[in-house]
Amino acid sequence: MSTEARPGKYPDRNTQLFYELARDRHAAQADALGALDTKLAFFLTSSSALLGILLAVYALRSDALHVFEWLLVGLSASAWILITGFALDAFRHRPWSSGPQLQQVFDDHFGERDDNRIRWGVANRFWGDYNRNKEHEVRKGRALTVALLLFVTQTAVLVLGLVLVVVSGSSESSRQCRNLGPAARVSRPPPTVRHRTPEANYRAALARLLACQKLGGDSNP
Image (cartoon, rainbow, N blue to C red; front, side):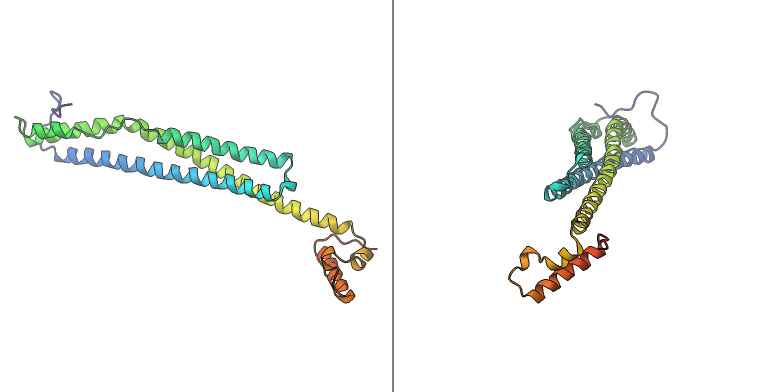
């Protein structure tokens, strides 16, 4: 495309100001798109990490997996799938308008147009390409907004899942303590202390009794 300005659009004054504004605006747009891609990549990798942590926790505590926990895993996986879809769509290559063709600008310097007219044509090309590239900026910005919301949702799901695992573990310990009578807690040593002396067994059983009392599972005889 020629850098020649359209008839009737060329001002009768120095065009340096408009040229610099259009060039800088086009360059700032390119930097903004690169920053959007960087943020999307961060949310994509972080989302994968959150899902991996949740799966690892439930893999180690498979006994804590119930219907609600499975729903949490499904919700986190769904958020990861959506973030991946939006990010890949934003990353997908599309034609980018990068300003005037260098060969055309080079040829114009050997033509009849003066420097002001060449700058004016180049500035108009930068301006037009900036407007054409706006759709890329809008698409990436929308994908980043969706990724942020889904990432916050995934974080909340992970925190809730960890809380449920801790509560489930505490409830299980308390239930085991309640199932033992006070006499059994003192007289019956744990399987791992068979070869200890009677005094050591008594101390171990007493320690278990104190631990159960701290958990609130002790009951009066």
